[in-house]
Image (cartoon, rainbow, N blue to C red; front, side, top):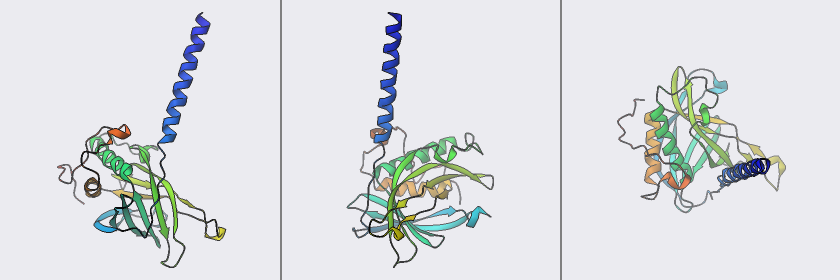
Length: 230
C-alpha cells in the first residue's frame, strides 16, 4: 500500500509540473502590426544605448513614442547604428513594464547586485514586435521577439534596462532578404523610465491591472517622488 501511495504522489507531482509548463508556454502570445495603420505621435523620451563595441560611456538618444489605435499598441521609434527600429508594446507588455519599474524602484539601490547574470531579466519577459530597416527604400524586416526587463550597472551606476532580443525575419519570396536584428539593451534612469511608464499608463483602459496576468503591484506614476535627476 505504501508503494502504491508513493506512486500516486509521484504521478500527481508530475501532472502538476506538466500543467505548470503548459501555462508557461501559453504566455507566449505573438502579435503583429501593420505599419500603414493609423498612428499618432504621443510623446518623446530620452534613453541611453551602449557605444560601438560597448566601449566608453553610454550615449543618450531620443525615441519618438507612437500609438496605433487599431492594434492598441505603443511604439518606440528610434535610430541606432544606422538602422531605424520600431519596437511595439501591446497592452500586456505595457502592464509588465509598469510593474517591472515599480519592482525596480523597490529594489533600488540596496537589492541591486552588480555582476548578477540574471539581472537583465529579473523583472520578467514579454513578447514584443519589431520592425527594422536601414534605408527607407530597403526591405522592412519584421518579426516577433522577446523583451527582457531588468537592470544593469554601467560606470558603477544601476540602470533600469529593456533588453531587446534578436528578431528573425524570414522572407518566403527571397531568401537573400532574410535578416536578423541585433540584441540591443536600452538603459533608463528612474526618471526616464518613469516618463515612459506614464505614457504607457495613459494608453491602458482605466481599471485594468496586471492581476489578469497573475501579477499584483501598483503602477509607477509620473509624479513619483522617487524620480531621480538625469
